[in-house]
Image (cartoon, rainbow, N blue to C red):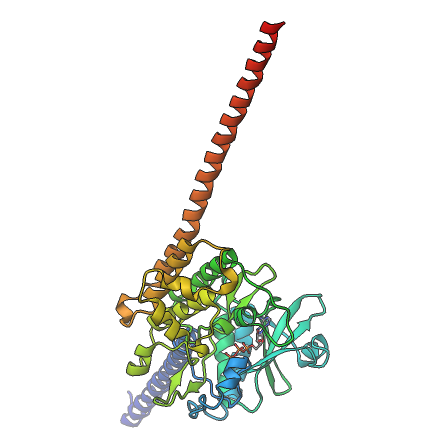
Length: 422
Ligand SMILES: Nc1ncnc2c1ncn2[C@@H]1O[C@H](COP(=O)(O)OP(=O)(O)OP(=O)(O)O)[C@@H](O)[C@H]1O
């Protein structure tokens, strides 16, 4: 016979057991959900489509930028929680190393490789850039993040995670990084011929090296392929936001690679508008009026670079005015062609490239071509020439065959004449 009191005890025990069971199910369920939500968040963080803005208060390194320093001012920075880098570091540093496969170096490694940071290549708004010879003999470029810059730290996070997944022969690839002793550095492939801007406009004390037309056409195609990868190959697509000749680097064979993608740009002030990102002279006017940066804004900046290749006139030296004047007649571009190319290149090819550049600068972003179309159009200029060269070489081969046949016949005739005389 079961007592009523026993039933109560049994009931309470079953209730408590059930309660514990439900509570632990809830506890483990919640933990599982949080873990998966965190992983999803991490995956999303690793694939940003838009990038933060850089405003670290440093000037740019080119002569032209320096001359403009009065009109380029910082307008504040995007807010970044003070300790976000630390939490990011603790949570993500190992993930970056494993996810991106990038090599991580110690401060000492870099200090040794840069001869105690004495091998400076230049100074950008990100910080100084040094040439480094690693223990393996490999030469690389080290971009040191300015330590007083919170924005730069955020940029560093973005760059490392973004660049870890972007690789293309026409991009300056990130090969490693360093987070040590409170310093953050990015290690890139070394580009021995420096920037396109320094070659086109000369760098202080540097020898003048004139790019011939073939090299310029190839550089245009290389840049186009680099951007094509960012816009149409990368998943999700990447908008560069700061395409300019100073961000195009050249290797020892004068092949071009796009640099500084994944780095965001300081905001510029052009006298009328504030809060814009990019470099004065390359910024899409539609972006200025709408504040919307699209792939077509990159196309606009690329159009400016194409005209720099044709004219060797810097956008800060009224390039746009020259372009507008040249667009008034079909052969207008001949007038603004780099004098050093005069008589040394095909006028038809120059006009074709200028026509592509004009389309990139169209006032309506929708009418601007996609980067894939630009690549095709530049490739066509090169192919037309190859076909022409082929036709010409066939023609000259036929001509030389005909001449040698005539020569043979002449020899035969004179021999016959001699025999007859004899
Ligand atoms: N991978 C590299 N190889 C060789 N030189 C480099 C490399 N990266 C940068 N440099 C040189 O270092 C200098 C500074 O480059 P950085 O990219 O920091 O600034 P920038 O592009 O000139 O200007 P900003 O940062 O304002 O856009 C430039 O003269 C550039 O040619």
